[in-house]
Image 1 (cartoon, helix red, strand yellow):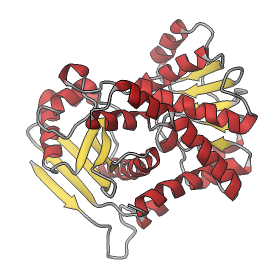
Image 2: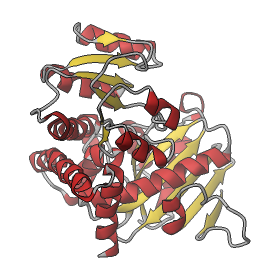
Image 3: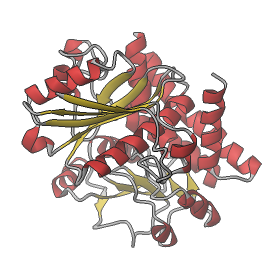
Length: 362
C-alpha cells in the first residue's frame, strides 16, 4: 500500500495542481493524500481543504476518471465546495472529498472498499467520509468495518441511511425562496420546472414539485431513469434536453458544469436551483446569470441537506430536528438572495461572503 501526501501548492513558479480557481489559490488545501493498493487495485485521493470549523466531511466519489489529474481536480474543487457548504449550513465541520478512480460496476469489491476504509482510518479523524456518485449506504457499511470515521451507513448498523430525501428537500425549500424572490410566489406551484438528472435526488425533487402543483419536464442521459419517473408521475413530460424548452426554473441535478458562458445565453429560465455540485463551469457564469436577470441559488447552499443529515447523525440528533434544520435552508437562501440584492452583488458572491465570514471568525 503506497501513500503520498502533499500539504501545500507548488512553489517552483509553475501554476501547479491548485491553479484554476481564485478560491483554490487564496484558500489552499491543508492536505492531499494519494493512495494505491496493488492487491485490491484501489487508487484513491483524499483532499482535505479545511478543518477550521471541525473535521473535514465529504463524500467518496467512485468514478472512471480519464486521468489521475482529472480525479485530483475533482477532489480539490469538491473539497473546497464542502468547506463553504459546511460554513453556510452552520455545521461544525470542515471540507474534504475523496475520489476512487475506476468504474464501480467493474472494479468495486469488498476488499477494495476495505482497503479504502483503512486509508480513511489512517488520517486519524481529520477526514470523515460519506456517500457520493458511485457509492451508497451499503458501501459505507463495508468501509465502516475498517474505520470509525464514516457517516451515512444503513440504519441496520446505526447510520442515518440514504440522504436523497433530505438533499431534495433542501433544494425544494431553496426553490421556494427563489420563487418568492423572483415572482413573489409562495412556491413553484404553477411554474414550469425543468429537472436535469432524475437519479435518487432528482426523482425525489420531482415528487415534491408534482405535489406542489408545478409543471415538470425532465431530461436524463439514462433512459431507464426517465422511464421510471414518467411511470410514477404520468403528468411529467420528458425532453431530450432543456435547451429548447420554455421553463421558469432550471434545476440541474446531474453532474456539475452544466452552466457555461455559452449556455447562459440560451437559458430561458429566470431561476436556477438544483442539487448538483459545481454547477458553474466558470466563476464568471455567476455574473453572466445576474446580468441576464436570472437568479441563481448557489449550489452548495441549496444542496446542503445531506450534509445536515450526517452532521445530525454524528451529534445523535433525532430525525425531526434534522429535518427542521434542512427546511431552514430556505430561510438561509432568502437571506442570501436579499443580501445580494441589497449589496448589488451576485448570489454566489453573497453566499461566499457568508461562508468566509464564519470561517475567518472561527
